[in-house]
Image (cartoon, rainbow, N blue to C red):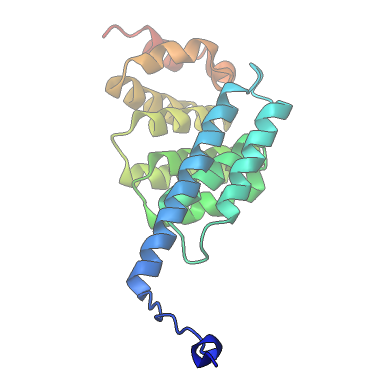
Length: 206
């Protein structure tokens, strides 16, 4: 009689520490973020000249959001917030993107992309005055960023605030002269394009 045949084999217990589990989770989240970022980048190449969302771009952006949905519940990095916000913005889901941009700039007030996206979505949601206030807040943290000054100039132009629009445009061009050439085809400036103050800034020699 082989008694050993009835003996159960005890396997050694595997004790995985909390730190190991956290490391594994972090690696998984990092991989998901990289994949989501790749989908969003590919979507940008599939956008039409009119900036409308083509079917291939829409699918890629939806894939990116699905990947971000798989992040661990505790994951709340700035990268995850900006990726989700940018994907929603590209899908023209401006209202849905707003809370993510808001959380991003609260978490990292020096995020230029966060402030720009926040203002953009407010503007596209018909909240121009709020967009102006948001970008003005952003300038308190990123006052040397010409893109914020340029967008503020655009928004003030749309609001009919010629003097303030010219002031921010002057600031943007002083930091980066390339913004001068952008004004020639920027429709936001159409209402003030012939204003002497605006013309003076555009024609000013460097």
